[in-house]
Image (tube, rainbow, N blue to C red; front, side, top):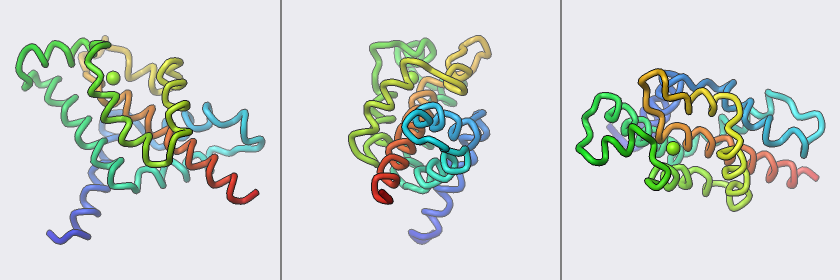
Length: 166
Ligand code: MG
């Protein structure tokens, strides 16, 4: 597999994995809309979706998605060693590595992303609330942070592109 084929394969799998784990483009676009509607009058879901799509085309983002989801799945399958398994199953607040992985996504479009990420992580609107519901026996310890980070990065991208057109 050459570099170009690998890039295509990574992007395809990252996008598929999100959907397989219950996160659609619409879910992600709704988070961006939630974060940005007050700053961009007339903002449409289409514009939100376009910005999410651009974020998902970045290799750093795809790597974080594949890595985080893999760790969530291995946790569900109880293939992690103790005590890490229990820490991931409980999504312990002091763990923090899930947030570090997510920051590699937030970083892609600069520092406005941090504020958005912190804000959305606190309020947990839409899909984030669903991912946080631990009653299904599924583990989204990494995915919830990744989803919040994608929305934050797409919001920063939107803000930057608006600034450029003004
Ligand atoms: Mg988490």
